[in-house]
Amino acid sequence: MLRCPNCHSIDLGIVGTHQLYCWHCFIEMTTDGERISAVYQVEEDGSLTSLNDLFLDEPPQPLMWD
Image 1 (cartoon, rainbow, N blue to C red):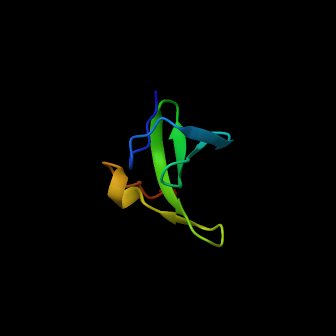
Image 2 (image 1 turned 90 degrees about the vertical axis):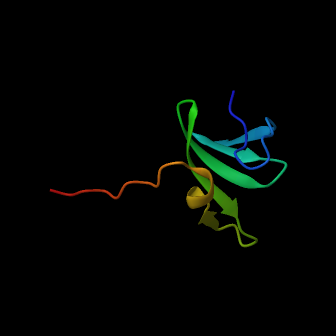
Image 3 (image 1 turned 90 degrees about the horizontal axis):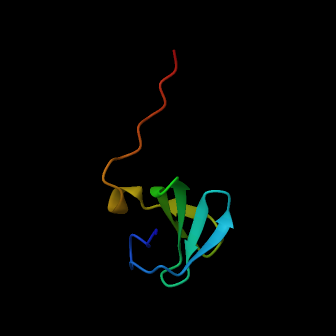
């Protein structure tokens, strides 16, 4: 069972395919199976600000093009 990485709540809503929203602390998460792959703060204007550096152990790897 997934929990919010910020407040540890299980009260998560489904926003879209592989996207969850915490109703307690208002952050959005992208999932990859049973793992949270990205965490975002929802701003007043609806834009998203990444919180990956605060909640994820490994920073996202840059895409490598051949």
